[in-house]
Length: 244
Ligand SMILES: Nc1nc2c(ncn2[C@@H]2O[C@H](COP(=O)(O)OP(=O)(O)OP(=O)(O)O)[C@@H](O)[C@H]2O)c(=O)[nH]1
Ligand SMILES: [Mg+2]
Image (cartoon, rainbow, N blue to C red; front, side, top):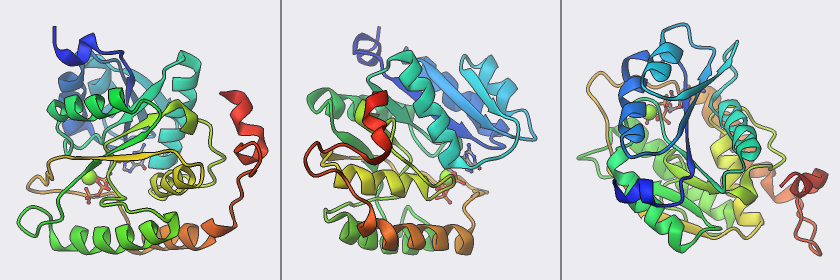
């Protein structure tokens, strides 16, 4: 039995959209560590759902594509129903190495109420230019607005503590992971960063739409100072903590 399967088992969530060629392998690697996996198949037109099921995941399906953030929120709702104390997210395209789950889980075991983020290197040797520029700019500005230092704000390899499962999120696409970072900072949820490998496969295909998704993130970040947390109770707006 591996160290991971002996640890308290959080749930692994893999948001997936047309990830048929890679999702089965990702699920199989995580299942081999003894962790439960849920894949949110976000209206894929390929065999993403079938491949994930065959590899041992529970598959939740959106009939139409709603975005990575919407899939993460479906995962949060599922995690709350399961009573899971923490939710791990990994990408479906093989850019996260399941073997590194040990490191993230070790950090989470020592800091169970923290947000754990796998941080990639932005070294030109390992990250393509386009991604490097976007990642550097977003990490700088999001750190400024979050008022704490982040080293990789776009990484999807994370562990979310239960406190973040019911945020009043307004976004649905690639901006959701930023919205969660900003809320975590506002709520004082500690941030722990863990180095991970930077993996770009040959023939890499991104769903990130440069202009559209970047503009969404900018709009979100510049409005974030207006979001309010009740200073007395530390509660989130809309009574969201009652659901926890
Ligand atoms: N559920 C869902 N998942 C998505 C969607 N778009 C992307 N994803 C998943 O989100 C993960 C990251 O998407 P990518 O397109 O690789 O974006 P990225 O990793 O941020 O960008 P790159 O650095 O270019 O790879 C992958 O696991 C995708 O399957 C979507 O519309 N819905
Ligand atoms: Mg990717």
